[in-house]
Image (cartoon, rainbow, N blue to C red):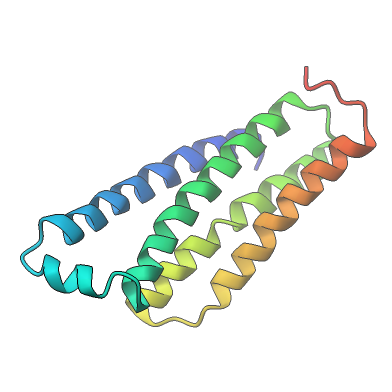
Length: 136
């Protein structure tokens, strides 16, 4: 894995979560039981589904940015691959929210993904803090 994969999967992931956002709009505005959806909008699965949508797009964007930065940097290959994998693994968080809502899976994937995306961002920041990499 390298930055190119973060960019590719980031865009694909963003596309999927944008489609999920359109589903949420349909459920809120056009579905036959939209009044019930609106009444439960700020509780339970309805609220969590919005969290998944927002975090899915945010983490996709972060992967696109991290992938671009990785490709442009002079970062050592091993560090580059490590950050790339960690950032991609961060996308477990929004997927974990959906698994929790629809399949009643443990929230462990939410926590793992959250730790990974934070770690990827911090490691990328530390690399640039410690080097004079001009991002050429």
